Image (cartoon, rainbow, N blue to C red; front, side, top):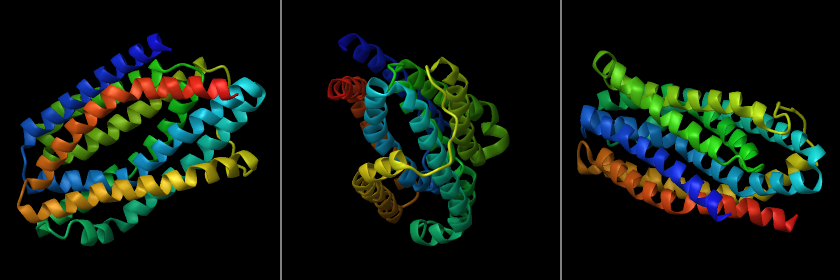
Length: 287
């Protein structure tokens, strides 16, 4: 367990380093301005959905899949398929809802921005809306791999996500201007999902979507309910902090976001590998 924790922590550390490079490039290329404030506000909106669901998937689905793997391995494919199907439905529905409601979100979230930046917020939000579907599906595929001990694959795919976003940023920052920011992150999320899907052949079971409701679906939903609500409130608080930052002038949201990301990166680096491996091992003991 210690060896696996060290390996996963090291790969996650590399992922955090690539993420740091990505946002360093954003800071160096675009600085801190009202336009970048619009981008980081727009980025925070889908995160209110993706972060809580991804957290619930790690906390609920990984232990459940690990226990099923030990007790009834023949049911693992069904559990993975159900989870992938319904999380994808939630992701696609959330993406479409965000595209439609972006102007309404702008009146609530981006009220402290100027008219031009508010229009940017709406455009950026709509561009990044599919990230909800991409990231939630990626979270399920990552959980499926983590549950069978393939910890390094999701971590490597995360590196690929940040790295591809950085390449897009460097390639098109002069021609696309600020619009390269949401497109780079969107393409990075898609690349991560494709990489995880292509890695699915290494799993000892199939992960094809199964669209039906059964006891597994209801059990996972009830287990994740309270955790989802708490995580959504936490992310909403983070979004609210950025909304308040708009009152401190152009660039305040951007500077706040840079600082928050640095802090989160250190926390993720210190605990992610140990927690994930420990979660799987404890679930095996419970089973």
